[in-house]
Image (cartoon, rainbow, N blue to C red; front, side, top):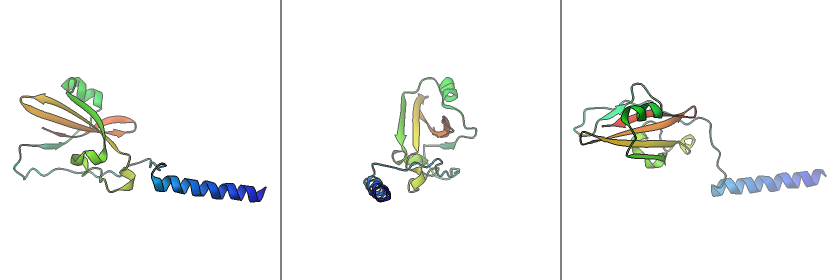
Length: 128
């Protein structure tokens, strides 16, 4: 019986190792690596990056701005603008998702990015 259990454990370890190596089984950390960042306004650009001074829930922003023209949840590697907050080279950020919404106001596009905090989408940064 002990030999059978040892064999089962060995096979299980090999199978789990192979799944990890193939990327089919991924460990998901509970807390991503987050960096507080404040933009510099010294560059000449039409874009104005604004860290959200008071992070707000998604429903509050939509209530104020109305329904967005665009609303999509994206993997971190597709939203380069927020890499200063969530460095993509950190393994613990592999599963971070960013929700991007935008509206048009006065011939300008307003984009707001949200991240999940305690299961709720909270504003992270916007561009006007």
